[in-house]
Amino acid sequence: MEKSILIKEKIKNFNKIITVSGDKSLSIRWILFSSLADGMSKAHNLLMSEDVLAAISAIKKLGIKVKIKKGVCVIYGNGINGYKYKKNITINAQNSGTLGRLLPGFLINTPYSIKIIGDKSLSKRDFKRISVPLSKFGAKFKLHKNKHLPLKIVGSKNLKPIFFKETLGSAQCKSSVIFAGMRTTGTSIIKAKKSRNHTELLARYLNLPINIQIKKNYDLIKISKVKKIKPLNYKIPSDISSSSFFIALTALMSNSKLTIKNVNINFSRTGIITILKKMGVKIFFINKKNYKGEKIADIRVESPNTLKGINCPKKLNSGAIDEFLIIFLVAAKAKGISYFKDIAELNQKESPRLKWGEKILNKMGIKTISSNNSLKIYGNPELKLKKNITIKNYLKDHRVFMTSVIAACAFGGNWKIHDKDSIKTSFPNFINIINQFKK
Image (cartoon, rainbow, N blue to C red; front, top):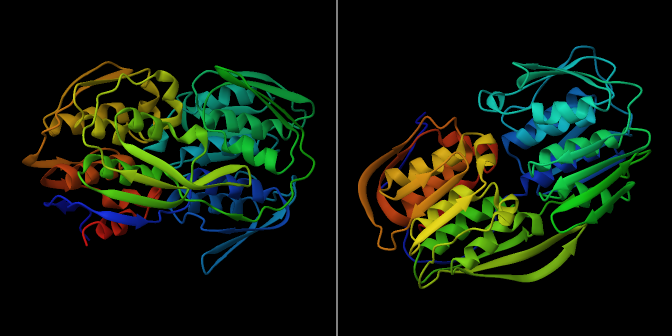
């Protein structure tokens, strides 16, 4: 089977209403919380991607019963101490950084050694960032080259509460420590750089012993031992990271409009909205509502008359960390120079995304200047492509693939983009939705 996709035609102007797949971050967190709940939890619109299926496989290995039928996932939790598993098990997180980094927090008290492995891409990512704080609780870790997967964890029965200063803006690190704190007698305190807060919102909705103080430059989170988690029935809202590709496509078009239904607009995830609005894109939230701690809305996008370059405030970085590749693409068509700084965290993703973002732009003929944590983009509002472009060898990073597809659809040219199966990680329905814009 051909693993690449060929795109030779630009998409024409459109006025569309679409629905994208369920939120990946919430899907994985729902699975993990439900695995510790007392009784049956049920989810509709759970994202059926490889990352989420890896999370389901993980809790099954930990002795949790799961049923999936007609688009509904049911998890039968056995309580906060209900995991049952054999000695020396291995759990495969595949490509999921969220799963790989959150799991050790859940397993902080395991009496047996548990090994966590991942695919080639995940195995290159930094896991020392979670082993260091989690070891302070009393667990013991062994990592490949002291940093990478495979990771082995042996927990402790006598966990000690900790103080952790999270400085990376990593929701995965913060969440892993929160989950470890849930198993620890006493109160653990996290002083966290601003990042996604899905874990905190779900914990608060479930009435767990968590206290969150929102400060100007950081959040102060206190978490105490959890005795019981109630079952959680959940209709997963649509994923704003998946939506961002179509928001950007609309921004790059002329005379086009798009509505995306029922999207999670959590403020810690809407950095791309703020950034693109500053660049001149018309974006509106309509039919807003609160749902189990999260904010949901339909997103309405109208293509702008002109796009302006941006000196992007670094305070917006954490809220757009997964969307920067597609933001760079919009900057390629903007008038003037766009400057993004303090974005070294991009190179801790599935691929070195800062490098790949620049590489895609350079292949398109866009001038850039970069450092190890910044990128300047010299936009060209008249950019139209007619040349051949090939995208390959990017560690099968789903966001590199999808960004390349949007570039081909918006700017033209003859594109051959390899490893189309990479989208199975987060957004298996991506190509099907792209095809809706061609009708």
